[in-house]
Image 1 (cartoon, rainbow, N blue to C red):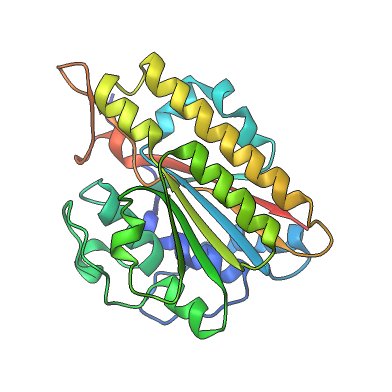
Image 2 (cartoon, rainbow, N blue to C red):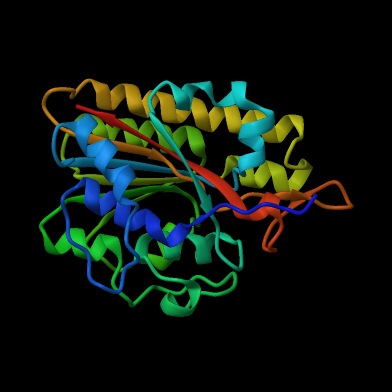
Length: 266
């Protein structure tokens, strides 16, 4: 059977977030998916004034299909699962650049695993111009800390996914930030070392899903005070190599097909 690939390109992520927050993006950005943002805004009762965007690295769609129970903590807090197609190459800097610029790799300039500071307009730049307070919480040496560097953003670098969770809970508790982007890659590391469906990899999936759950619970404490958009949004997947380890970067179904989950708290 031929491989099947998801329809929506990853570059439409920024448009969904912006639409849900009532923010107009420059014409350079790919449009969001109007029916997705319409559903979410209806659930919110208006535009979101908070967004918490959790990026668990390298979680492919087939992981959801085969190990659905592990992701139950994410289903608890989300209402829409949207299939996305990752970028070529299907590696973290390329994918996350497209997610936050609304551009194909040819447009934003990152086409392989390199991590220059992006000079083109990003979703962050648009939000900062509107006076939004933004934080990035990520593991050490995260791509987010490189390609989105040099902006009026509060950057928090953490040793592992547990520390990322703790810092995210602290920032949510401070009630100071309009947008928090979170990047963890415990699963990506484990999958590279032991295989995408290894015990170590699946344990990391559970750990990151539980972190998402705790972050969502913290947001729920502000229900009625804020309209919050929540997403669990991977960048690409991983495939098993002949050597028993995980890899990504090609155009296989395992690397390219991903699911994004969106929820609302209002």
